[in-house]
Image (cartoon, rainbow, N blue to C red; front, side, top):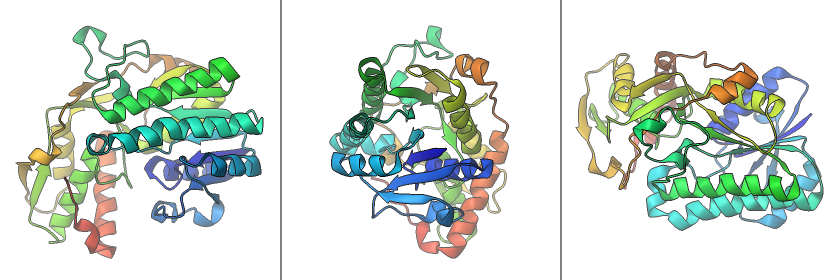
Length: 329
């Protein structure tokens, strides 16, 4: 089977490539830009086929989709940082909405019939009323950031291509997921990196934080990619599925898990730059629809995820101490 991953050099994409290779009997292809950092693929770089393309360039997508002719597409490429979307709303919308449209157009124009996983986001639901918690797939959209708006657009264009062109799109609204290799602009990885940098004396032992009272349901990325594989094998084209963990906690509790493994005592300091102009303070999913079809359930505990993230950043900063620098604006 030929499997194409957009965003293969990213956090989830690289974990997905590793997992699919472990299954055997699949040829893995990835779309990436020439300037994409490929460090995340260090374990599998020589085992996958990389093709140069950009979501903003329809021509490049048409050529590469024609060359690969994939049986399955995992569309993971996106501008995925919520806080950055407030500063760069147009770029966020262009990448996530127009970029997804370009990908689907490339498939349609080439006349192929792959299963296409389009990765939307739980952010589309926004701040949900208490009576709608846990959040089901029928919950109304109330996006609270340009990123969330872009994911509404991506979600809906995927549905439209199924309704109009019968492209076999399957949408997911993934709730909070994290793990080793997560970018340092996301809260759990940002905390882990700061702790590791403090241990290595690359910075003062002060952990900058945003809103620690926000509530999230945590899923490990290594569980998430297994869910994605089950999705394309067992779920229905044209439909949408919530996926998420089974442990709900405050952001501050995730920080406490990380600090429990810290080798130095750290001070906690709220940084106003890390507070969103409008925030979603609670996201608790109902994943019954997905689990009833696939039998999937998270296997990795948040405690294990936190420990592995901290260990990842210790190794990263030992080799590349310059990565300890983080710019938050």
